[in-house]
Length: 320
Image (cartoon, rainbow, N blue to C red):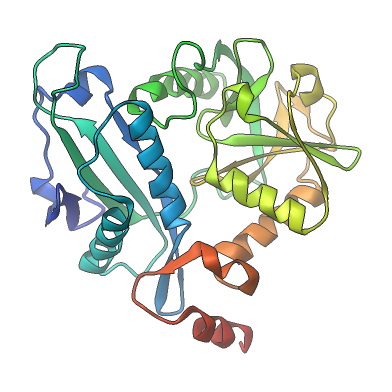
């Protein structure tokens, strides 16, 4: 039996007990995937919990809703306040995963959903690692399924229905004994994982598929790009071919849940020497410093839940 990971859920402007956070079986979003969502992480440090890039995540949700003509009844600031209120109400003091979701509710079965009302909910619960923390990295495969995208659907939107594509690929990979799958796009070029963006490293150049490759505009991806630029490393956002996967020196995934995840092998071919490479390890360590508030330069990305002043908390951490 599923055990509730939280006491409370935010639903349509109210915080309700977990068991009352229910949706009717006739909801349009259940039948057709008409909804958008976000995945947000929060990290604990001392007596504070920091939400990572809260406004950026919720802005992307607003953009996804706009692409799908989904009128959200709350603005970004109201959603930000709702997230913080929910975490406080649950009295969470550990690292968390936060899932805001907006979807079409009751309104019939017509595919013209313009008049179907929109519901918004937020779930928050304790969360540590997405992939097996006992492994130093991932063994992945190139999926036989292609990543959906333009001109069929807008790949930039983080829409509920899109993820049936990821379910197919992840299930296929798991059945074959892999940790994760990697999509190619309609042109046969490298796209992304089932829930992660990908970077490869070759001869000191860090490359990642561009937005034109039908990828989601990942917020963790953007953070890593920011780190790469600030560290004066070489970066190219470009078309990445499948063949490059088998000859690169390093490869890693980035994502809200995945964070920075080294890739050890692709289609059973080792990446580099089959171990996490120096660039991957460096960026992973720097990313961890950002989300836990130990790098003062990036405190702008952190929103404290319980109101501790960030510079005071940082000073205390650095004195340890």
